[in-house]
Image 1 (cartoon, rainbow over the protein chains, first blue to last red):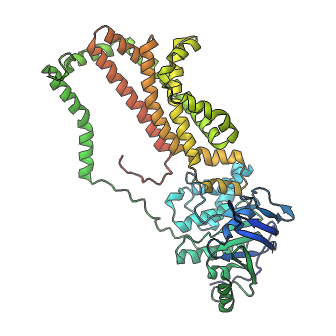
Image 2: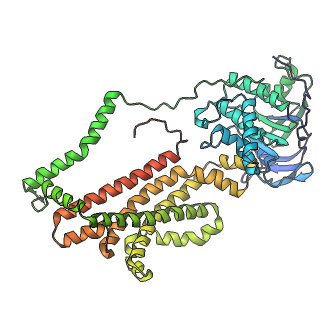
Length: 251
Length: 280
């Protein structure tokens, strides 16, 4: 297995977004799920958020995407308050967010279509991304004709084709079997190497967090319990038992 | 290089395919269904059966066939047919467009809902055919009145099913389009309109059925041409074989237009996970 160096991300891609979370309270209905969260997210880093079910991981991500308004506090993206969704902050969902009536190609072209990219440019960019995620030849298939892993590859291509400055990933591999999940983690690391986008990745799988993260945020009841820096190369074979134990303790 | 995705077949859409023997039986039953009904009719009418229900005054298949042959050779028959079809297609076509538009607007916009819903809910229980007096007063010609009645009849099933289909859309699809930079317009075109098609086609099927009921009834009351008008005229002239020919014509027209809606619906919703090749 190739070892990916930890920051291996350069190139001409657009720089990642930096986020500042200030006194952020989030929730649905009455009680807040997250209370007074403060966090700095550095442009271009891969921040993995772990936490037990109901700790507000997905809620946090939805708020950062602009899908959910905070109860209190604010979220700044490059210093500008997040007030609505934006193509700069693409999201990858755990449940299949693909539009089932669109083929793989049409799904991947969607962000470019929304942006008004001419047909030829759309087709070229979508084709390149579909090949990049290993789905060349499946362009004309409908989502229902794809396996779970293939559908997540399409979601990844669709999120990245528009060159967003941040990618918000909500347990994207949570529903996959172990082997497919490992393949997808590798694919993610490889494609991220070409972008400088900031990645916020939510998971409940500590090993996934250890593999992907520059930093791991552990969410507990109502807020951030700890932030753990990762060091060394992104190598699945590396011994991370100490960090692992620490995260599990925090959880 | 990225390794190509495992192209193992996804959880296969496992449609139970009928055995060849089962399929043959199905076709045979379908083909025999109408002739069997005709056979029962013939037996009851030839024997002038009076089994509480009185079949002695109804025409036999022979009488009906002779009348049908006469009607088929008469250009007026085709004029009636065309007239009814034109009325139903105009009324139904307008109702489909308006029903989807109003259904989406009411489901997606609170302001529209507040303004339109009380009115729509108050008018909905009125049978379209009860609007005949209003239609006669309102429209300069009978023709427009009949189309109006047909429109009203088909509008409500389409509008109601559209409204429910919009409300049943998973929010995930809308979230996905919004986080890809899409606004309201994009959500409407890329999520709402394609996503509601399965529900809308349910409404269109029902709408087509009630549109036929109403166009025929309206023709019987105030038409100058049309299958409904002709059928009622035959009844008043005590020409019972012609009544049955008229009824059979209505049945066939209704069946073929419903089949057209069904076919269009299946084509437009090919993406649904219901399996390919499943017999229906």
